[in-house]
Each structure stands twice: as structure tokens, then as C-alpha cells.
Length: 249
Image (tube, rainbow, N blue to C red; front, top):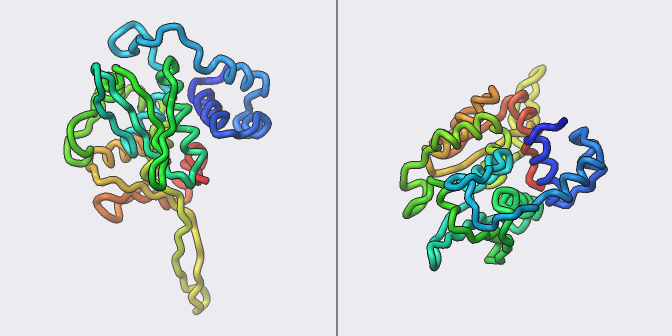
């Protein structure tokens, strides 16, 4: 029996185009199970039901991932008849991230199509639904860094159960994995060495605090070189993030 987090990661990898053999080897899930998950994904009977204001069930792992994407590069905009558009902006140079954003939206709201809208240098992954504000009560007027952003109790419960997926969404949107370098004097000679580290940049102190909290849940050490920039550079922290984030390409 596999938990929901493994299933969510596997479905995101399938949506990104990874082969079943590769996913099976990486996650230890049989190809038969992966085919079954792929076949079941998106089946639904109620196109209007809301997991928050009706008796629907919210799939927690993909929601945690989508919440991270929303807090990073997502927004809601109101259209006619109280319909809202969820947009997640993705850089065109990372097609895997575009596919993962689409897969996360489909998993949370499988009853409606997801659109890809091309813009200058990026693709907006777009979905229409009246109930997107129910999913993201953080929605409000103006940029996110100019208003209070906090998680509701039910969101905190989901993130506490799936901090890896929230962090995957945050680092895939407003973060990166880079090669850093430093110098050290060894035997009287100055030597240069490289090491990987993760960076997360966001102008919202509240969103930065959510990222710090999620990292703390996993005992991943971090520091703040600047007020709007978080760094994970210690080897054990980078290795832990590599398990569920990794490079963007």
C-alpha cells in the first residue's frame, strides 16, 4: 500500500512525461500500479461540487503542491457570473514545471479542462471555477506581498501532513537549486570548491514565514541572507530537498 504523497509525486512525474520504468525505479512503485493510477486520474461525476462548501473530498497531497504554486506564482481573478480564473505562471524554459502545475490543478479540480495560455516568456496554466476562492482564502485585492497572507487551520493541517509537496510548489515557483562556490586555504594554497544550495525568494514576509515553517517541520536548516531571500546550503538540508524538489530542468 502506497501513501497519497507517493501517488501525488508519481502522477506529477507521469504528467511531466517521465517513463513508467523511470518512475518505478525512482519511487519503488510497480508499473502496474502506475498504470492504474494514470487510468483513474481525473475521473469524477460532479463538475460543480466544492470540497470545502459541499460534501466533496479535497485530495490533500496535490492540494499541498498547488498551494505552494499559488503562493509563489499563482493568482485568482474574477470573471462573469462569479467565476474565478486560477492562473499559475510558469517559465517556458521549464516544460516539466508547466506539466506539473497542470497535473496539480487537474487533481484538485478534475471536472473542467485546464488551459495553457502563452505569454511573453512564460505560460499561464489556467482553470475556471466558482470555488477557487474556497480553495485559496488568501485571495484578495492587490499583490500578495502587500496584504496579509496566512494559512487557515484546515490548510495548516494539510501542510503539516505534506510539507514536502508544499515546498516543492514553493521552490518550483519562486525558488531554484544553484551551484555556489567558495574558497578555502589548504596547505597554504587557496582552493575553490563548489557546492549546491537552494534559494527561495519572495517579497511577502508572510509567505516566507510559511516556507520557513514547512522547512522546520522537516528539520531542514535554513538562513536568511536578505529579508526576501532564504537559503538552504548545509549538506543535509540540500540532500533532503533533493528527495522531493531537485533541479527545475
